Length: 256
Image 1 (tube, rainbow, N blue to C red):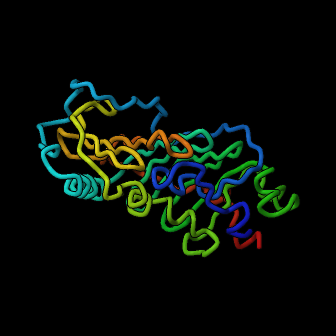
Image 2: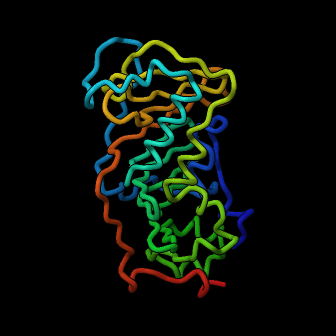
C-alpha cells in the first residue's frame, strides 16, 4: 500500500480552497453511497451581497478591520472551537467531515470513489469498496478486508496525506489563508448569517460579523480551474467520535 498509489492525495479542486480534501481517493469505482457523519447532510446556502441574515449574536465589528486582522480573528476563533463540520464541493471532489482537535468522522469522494474515514486516538479507520482495496493491495487482500474498516496509525508515513486532513488544526490551516491581494467587501449573507467577504485572487472567504467571527464559507474564484465551495457549520458543538468495534476492523499491519 504505497502513498503514491491508492493512498495518494487527490485534490481535484482549485488551489488552497479544498487542498487535500479527499486524501486517499483513487480512480477505482464506487457507488458513492455511505454513511454521513453524525450530523445530517444539508444543502449549503450560497453567499450573497444581500444585507439581511439571521444574527448569531451581538455584532462583533470584524468588518471594520483590515483583511489581515479579519483573517487573524477568524483563524483564532476557528482554532479555539471544539469542533466544526466541513463540507467541500467541486466538480470532481467532495468532502463531508465533522472534525475536532484530535478526531474526525465523515466521507471523502473523488470521481467515482468514496471513502468513509474515522480518526480516534491517533488511529485512522478507512472503509471502502472491494475495487478500491484491490487497487490499493490486490484482489486477495481486498477479499480479506471485506466490509471491515482498515485501521492504521496516523504516524505511519504512508498515511501522511490523511494526517494532514483529518483533524482541525492541519485541515483548517489549509483553508484559512489568502494572498496579499485580499480586500474587504460589503457585509452580506453566508450560511444564513451576516458575514463580511475577504476576496483575493484565489477566491472569497466569508466571516461572521455577529457572535464569534467564525469562517462560514469559502468560494474559489470563477477563473480557477475548478469552481469549488467549502462551508463551515455547526461550530463548537460537543462531539464524541468513537472507534468502530474491534471485530469490524483489520490492522494495516496485517495487510503488509
